[in-house]
Length: 393
Image (tube, rainbow, N blue to C red; front, side, top):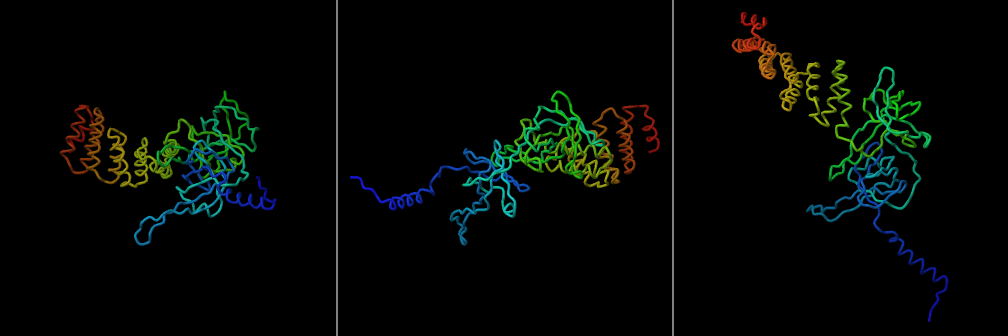
């Protein structure tokens, strides 16, 4: 026999059942991630599972804190400290970006956790695509020559703009060290009349920060649209040809230009930046030593030149610079020894032996000076300078 409950009774039972079931409704595995980078309100999150998430979905950012016994220090358990809920604004292949305004951003730390929660928000649309590169720059006219790899329809999304960018930093996966995202900053916005991928295009540019920004040959040009038009920082997937030196090669090139213009103080700032990321990059240590010498910071010059010579012991340029540094310091004996090593390195150059002889002479070491001048005569028996110096020892 089937029994029917009165309508009110049935509704009450259904309500009780739903109240019991609701907390577990959809309690399958939700999207989870870990905070790996924080900058200017942007939160970059690395997914921790294979679940999907879409722009606008809210995530809870929280911190797992250990609870320990106040006397013994034994771990008693863990608590989750909720920080803030915020929507996801961009989805990449290996990362997710959220944006936070307010004091909660200052509370966040790398290593905090993220989990998808109920709730959606409408978020602004926007995107960025690599479109080409700079192949020449005319600083005086404020124009550059661009090479585009593809045609991008600027009418497709508005607002839209072409910009020169720089890779400001890289973000690596904590365990593997794999580069999974690049921190990108726009350097300049371009005025481009028309795009043809078969031709190089002349364009005017406006530096976003005239005091700090500059354009280098080889810089990447992107097409950005939507909300990204007004952004001064975003995250991108690394290109297939990305290498670590991409982060600082443009600073090295700028340092070279400044050094060749005798602006040693500004050049040194660029070389110091490179040294922070890769001290042994190309001739960076040598150039720092040369800048320090020109700025009369001779102890620092000696230190950097010797460091360079440990890596490149057969660099005539570095040995010459070191000898000059010793001369500036009034250290004739070390200058003479340096010239002697340089002479051995060069082999058939009597001038280095004559310079060594001169330094030994200034140091009061006549016998060493004589040997150096005789070495010069072994290479060039008619060398008038060596003959003259020997007669006057």
